[in-house]
Length: 69
View 1 (cartoon, rainbow, N blue to C red):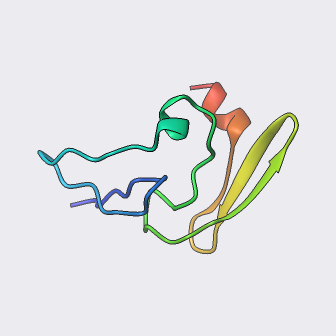
View 2 (cartoon, rainbow, N blue to C red):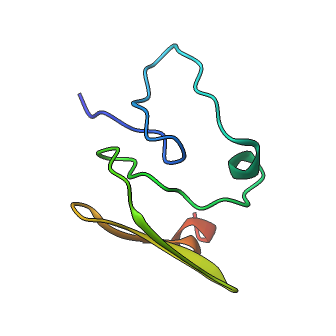
């Protein structure tokens, strides 16, 4: 089974359990701080036109990528 982690808290997501999300993250004002795949803390860089976050194991995620989904 593929485990997933909350990108704002780093806690493992357990099906059936409610996972609290920070208010700023729910509003889209906060970039992810933890990797969704492994729960590790990421290096985050914020700029006026977006952000990027880098996991040492899973690479870089950019705000522009998420806007295209």
